[in-house]
Structure formats: structure tokens, C-alpha cells
Image 1 (tube, rainbow, N blue to C red):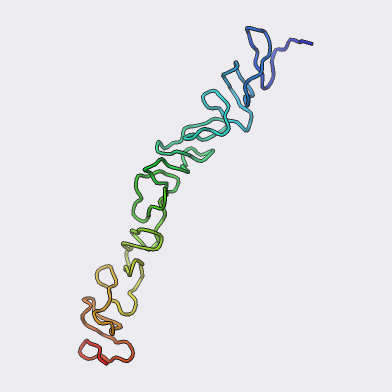
Image 2: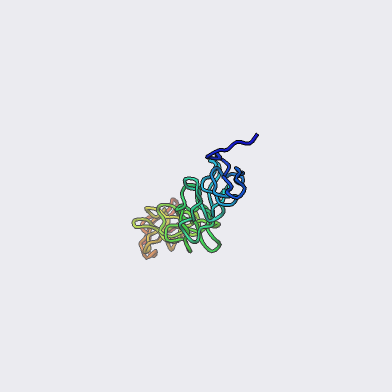
Length: 193
């Protein structure tokens, strides 16, 4: 039995040509006609006047609408937060939710991400190999240390081995020995057996 209604209700619209309530397309809660949606059901978001789930790449769902990611080089941004990038375009690296063309000081490239170097490193090539250290640290075989190990001396910002393998402690020019390993004795800045 047909009845006349003032409002067709959720999921339907009034077709002025036929005078009937007709179904909105899938996912649409309120529509003007069969292809223009005003509001989607909760699990859907509006994108170009259509209800979609999920929002397409380069967009993020915020309050039931798909919004463009805030960064042009962002391929996939966080749902609900279009300013935070999860995946960047080729040629870019993700660092703390931002797309960058290269990893800066204190970071290194790992896949399509920039990761932080060891906190003592100024520059590094991976998680364990430093190229430069921060102030008050010295580079020793790719590691930043607050003092040089036995058998090495500080030369500039690096730890270098003493000239003699017998030497435990030497001058910054690596030539003069101040202390020898066991079984050796010091004479005139050199270690002898």
C-alpha cells in the first residue's frame, strides 16, 4: 500500500519526477538524488559527493569527510590527521610524520624512512656507524665515546691508535708513549721488552 510522506527517511530521497521515495546509493544516509550525497553512514566518508570506505590514497577521513593530505609528497596520511604522513612518494623519506627529500644531520636513511642516529652522533650512515660526533665526544671506529680507549689518543675529534702497539697511553701526535702495556717498560717515550 502506498502512502504519502513529507520526508523519505534515512537512505532515501524524494524523486520530484516520479513523486516516489527512492534509495540513495550504498553507504549514503542523506542524499539529494541518486548520485549526490550529503551525509554518509558512520563507517563511510564523503569524497566528491560519494560515500567511500576507506578514503582514497592522498586523503584522510576527518568527521565523515575525506580531506587531502596536507603534504603534497605524502602518498598515505593518518586517518583523522591529514597533517601526519604514514607513507611518502618515491624519492622522499618519512621522518616524524613529515616527507623530506633527504635525511638531515642526526638521521640516516633506512628504506623510505629517516631514522635517528645514536644520540651522541652528529652524522651517521646507520644505527651503529657514526661519521661525526656531537661536542665532547670522540669518534672511535664508527662509535662516539666520551674518552679514547686504552692504546689510542685524541687527534682532533677522533681517537687514533698510538704509533707503537706496545703503548697504552700516548701523546696527541701519537709518537710519544707515556705508559706501556704489561711486560714492557718505558724509556724515553718508547716501550721496550
